[in-house]
Length: 249
Ligand SMILES: Nc1nc2c(ncn2[C@@H]2O[C@H](COP(=O)(O)OP(=O)(O)OP(=O)(O)O)[C@@H](O)[C@H]2O)c(=O)[nH]1
Ligand SMILES: [Mg+2]
Image (cartoon, rainbow, N blue to C red; front, side, top):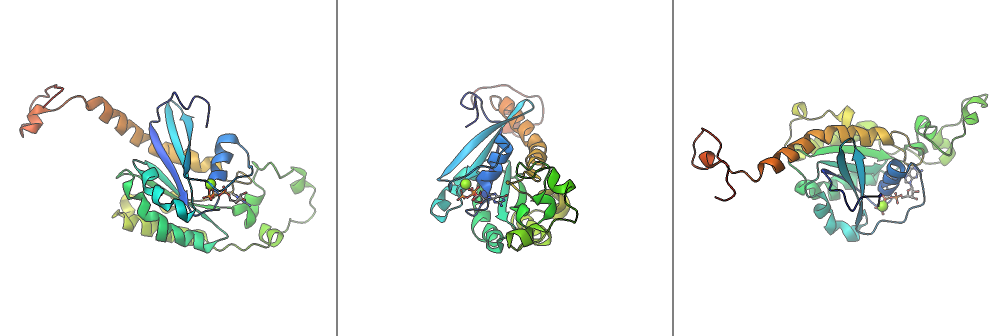
């Protein structure tokens, strides 16, 4: 838990969802602590608080294990953004998002933003494998190498099972599931990411893009909170004229 988190009140909530082992906890560690470290499978859920300019953003890590499935919709309640995470080397982890996790997001805000994140890209893509953020990648690996290095897939022996096009197609189905028009929603190219918690590839870009996109949600919530002690009596009676201030109705 970050320092000071007990005192600060979150302005907005972002939730990570996805199957076990896809790297949700590792993505959060990478972003919050700037490292890739050993994880244990998450039990229940945990949250981190991120200061973003003047705002406090709570980022919730959830358990992907089936036994905790029932908790998912509780964690999604009131979320302004949900990061649906899969593993690019595991097709089933993408399928699970649609089959098991999407229904949990019905408790999120009506204007919730959805991002689709394919993690472990370092195992299949050279640019993610050699991300400049990587702690494991020494600078000389690139410069001293006379021929281009072998692709990560051939190094790791792991095949990419999910293409960016598969993710874009799922993003379209998510919008339809939510009754949203593609034309009125954030475009798939902006909301589908491939990341590596291991090397740091695209991790900051993911979280920071989302934080920018949830700002309107924060401002709306703040407006609602300011307006909540007032009741428009004229409106209650169907009138249109001046606002009346009242604490009871
Ligand atoms: N190569 C590689 N391994 C990763 C990456 N992210 C996570 N892992 C590994 O994948 C395993 C699972 O990572 P976690 O972050 O614990 O996965 P999780 O989604 O939080 O899993 P649950 O808590 O069980 O839902 C660990 O062994 C990580 O080291 C990544 O970007 N690249
Ligand atoms: Mg976890």
